[in-house]
Length: 251
Ligand SMILES: NC(=O)c1ccc[n+]([C@@H]2O[C@H](COP(=O)([O-])OP(=O)(O)OC[C@H]3O[C@@H](n4cnc5c(N)ncnc54)[C@H](OP(=O)(O)O)[C@@H]3O)[C@@H](O)[C@H]2O)c1
Picture 1 (cartoon, rainbow, N blue to C red):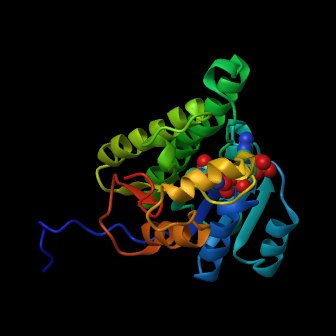
Picture 2 (cartoon, rainbow, N blue to C red; picture 1 turned 90 degrees about the vertical axis):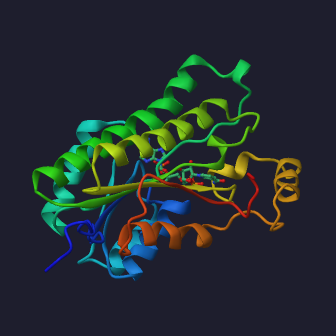
């Protein structure tokens, strides 16, 4: 007889929705999940040749599309078509985001709005959409929010961006409580890594980040990906946590 004091484990995900899967960390996550046998639905505003190639390599287990995450109707339509093709989504990686490279005093209202809409409002809406479907279908699931060490340490030029990442860290904790263990909700907060988003950083800033990092190097997406995979597909009770992968730069 099973022990009623031990909660039923939340099963690992088998169909994972990855926002911003066209390049950078999102593409690395989508590739890794496919390599580990999962099915992946990935979207971005533009389907890059790299994402199209990934889909071609795994035609039975991928669904890709061109969707703006801030367009809720388009996101809903993508999720419906992904579920028809792959089966019910039981994992979500909120990875899509836009960066910033402007001092707060010089940032236009429209730009603050765009950063908040893309990095905070849209992932909250996508999460609500995914969770409603999981719960309506009586399914359990996993959510991983990609946030940033900017939520925990100050960085000039990233004020609105940092606010959105801090917001997602806070939402991670409250949603984990709200869902009572039926869906495990965690965040992974990487340190700076090379990508289109971080290409705006100058060499002086990069050198400073490396100097401040005990491991003496920038974060690599390859260090972040296994943590995301664990939270999606391992038998675990990790829930409501923000896991920092930054070589201790932020401590
Ligand atoms: N790079 C870093 O140093 C760093 C550090 C800490 C955390 N992060 C976080 O890691 C995640 C990935 O960042 P990255 O460096 O890999 O960035 P990236 O190379 O700029 O990729 C961002 C992805 O998000 C997509 N995206 C952006 N706006 C979108 C929208 N409105 N609708 C749909 N998709 C959208 C992009 O595709 P489209 O442009 O075609 O839409 C792309 O696929 C982000 O959450 C970022 O905040 C990055």
